[in-house]
Image (cartoon, rainbow, N blue to C red; front, side):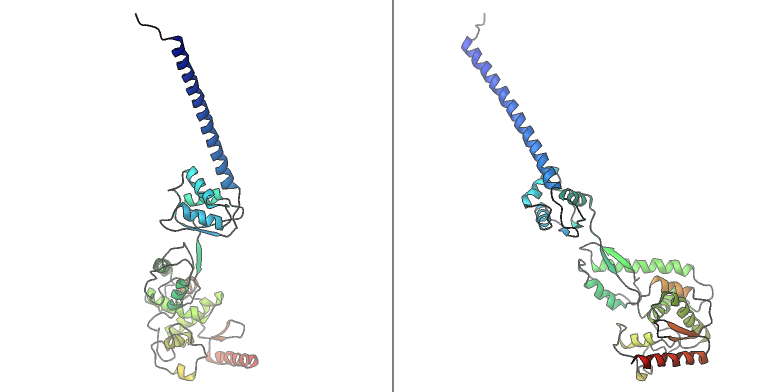
Length: 340
């Protein structure tokens, strides 16, 4: 027969059980308080501040929460960097933040920034490449564009890039941007070539780019491009020299700018680009033409103009005969004299 434990031992066990239950309740309560406090802190730290609109936050490749915290404090999203680090950890986003550059919009909070970084909604930078620039000038634009990094690639062939507005992210390479510009030109030229006028003195897409580059450098007036293209197409059909000043300039300086007016000596010079001396097209494009210039040479205006000259208003006066052209030239000379 088993002996019953003494009454004092039973009381001790009961007391221990009661104490353990109390500790469990207290621990659970404390844990709940901690969780609630953490949740409240996360909400306060993530929503309590608005950063400066337009500020750029950058997380470099391989960067972590310390980088984000430093940038967030700088942008006014938090008072202390540890606020940001703790918020990231409490949300479980330590390894979810994607590297890149992010822009703060008006009223955006830390929570909004962190959500953008988790989703990878990176800031897009903008590079505008105007029509008619030479490849050397485009390369300078790329090298001087903030956020573009090496490698930049070799100097592209003239006329191999399509002028346009390109969006890129910080850390994109110059070589990658050039590849996009080359691809854009290839796609555009292929499409326009299939839609070209059936009767053109242009045998290949490359010849179309050469002529379009001349049109691009001759006029910056949109509605004139098909007219200027028609003049050169009519001249090619008639076996006349193109007599384009921009080609002469390119033969003297590959940037397309000699910094002075052409002289008689320049026009008499022996270069492959002097279309006052050679017949037909020069050997290469003289710039990078845009879509409108390419479309113009492949479908020029249905006119029989053979001449054009500046008219003093930023545009040109067109003529069918040399006699009419000479009158337009005389008017232009008078404009020049009046402007001195």
